[in-house]
Length: 442
Image 1 (cartoon, rainbow, N blue to C red):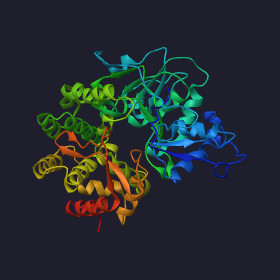
Image 2: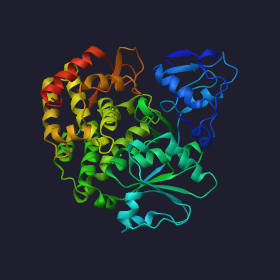
Image 3: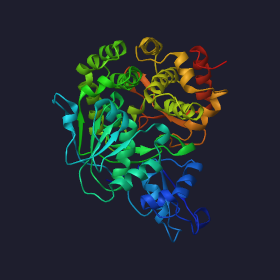
Image 4: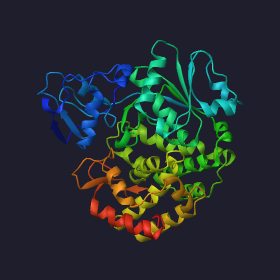
């Protein structure tokens, strides 16, 4: 399935001096069967801060193969002068399994791309043809995708991906690059609530940040079973609850958000709420599968969160912030920025901040500092990361944010649900917020 580039708001004209001549094919390019120069084209696009709404004008070039491949996966797809904007269509089932044992959903005839921890905890025997991986954000890379791509290249068997969000994103990306269909069996709350719903696949791209390369590719089916959560560490359940809380805010139901904020981080406590948590995102995806408008609200809290994750992985690669932990801080800051930018009234700002800070899933300040790593002068690193964010479409001095105007209601500019905020405003708000919340290391 192709990825949907947004209709261009501007065009970047490429000329021959900016494209590598006689490039030598890298190992990853060979393994993924990409034209030589694809990786160089991706680096060029990021270094020039091109956005998803900047089309690539390739008319002046004789050989466009590498740039066409790069455009297909850059920020999950941009339009080139040689093609029209693409759209994703189709549907897939999200099945809530009623098997007594979740392992019963693993098909005997399928290749299993399986998380190593899940295999160990559930005693799943790897068979010939299966691929067992232990991935962290550090391994969420093109190199890992190439390994998976090569593993499935010579088989036509069905493919099931069993694990958490990192494995789902990476393996689904590799399988989609190969033009194959796949089923997802998420085994973490974060994967159930977020990664396995919506068709986003992808990997990180070094210094350029988290999830910057990818495709939109819907699975043939997602199979949910709450029993997988029984072996999940409490820290990971809390991280999943943070993402789930975002869904509660989006649903505009304060009783739902309060319930999730007060929920014990156990599989038993989550089970009655799992269907509703997942349905919030599924309903938005059904309305806007191509991320052309409403779907952007699912990124509430993510702009800062992705920056904190990237910084954490640099300074504490062995034990970095989890995605949901970063989201919990990101939602608090996005709420504060909504208030300081004049969109959110004081009473709703206070309500959300109070509920978030007291939530049982909220990461504590000591935990935040431990997992972030030994970072001095945090703002320049945050700034560098947020200006590479995929949502950015405007000038070099502004970045796009998903902001609130009321509980569950998001600021809309035209058909878009993001707001351009000037760098000076973000810096001032961050420094005030971080000082108030004791997020700055002394």
